[in-house]
Amino acid sequence: MENAILVAMSNQIANRRSLDIVANNIANMNTTGFKAENVLFEQILQEVGSGNEVGSEISFVQDKAVFRNFEDGALVETGGAIDLALSGKGFFVVDTPEGQRYTRNGNFKLDEDGRLVTSEMHPVLDVNGNEITIGPDESDIQIAKDGSIETSLGPKTSFNVVTFENLNDMRKIGASMYETEQDPFPADSVTVHQGMIETSNVQPILEVTKMIEVSRAYQSAASIISDAEDLQRKAVNELSGNS
Image: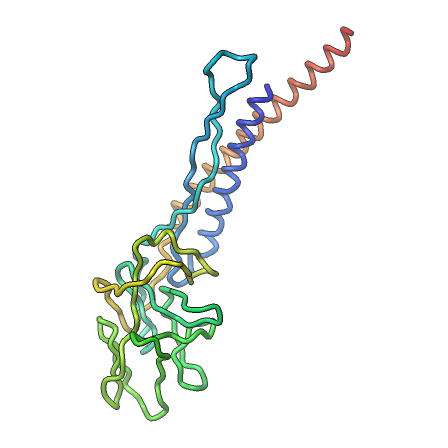
């Protein structure tokens, strides 16, 4: 009876973690460059006590890791000269007080010093590791598919678009920025699109369906725990009445 409660509790904890992830996906379905997440679970086998059959085991479930879907989101045309989207598994490099970080959110803007920055005001870096600036005397910003930048004064520099060996080893910071200890390398197969932004790749109908299924599984585990506890109380009461 106790084993049934423990197994149901492990299932309930795993489902609660799943619900948190699904809810976060739904909350960020309109966040530029957001990547949908899923939970990876693993089975844990534990041998039962000596009072049961020799060699029998109980199966528990535990959430092991979060897996991100790095497939491209849909591209939406904005017409903004410094709105940029990436096709392929690459990232823009930005400078933060904690060091270099990586993002696919190309909804950039210019600060008062003419620096190209993210919505969090982090400077975007070029291939040489320098901040990208647009002077007050420059106009007609043109960004090629390879990330090279040209203005009315001629060619300037190129965006530093990078990728990594294991994208799921990257840690998320906020909704659309990442950090990692991996060494970046040029994302040669990635295309830069000017005047567009990449939407979230969350599929709302799929996530809502998943939330319903996980909620039902969570409630089912709760019912098992409640029924087992009722049986325990009944057994204790009957034993107390016979003593």
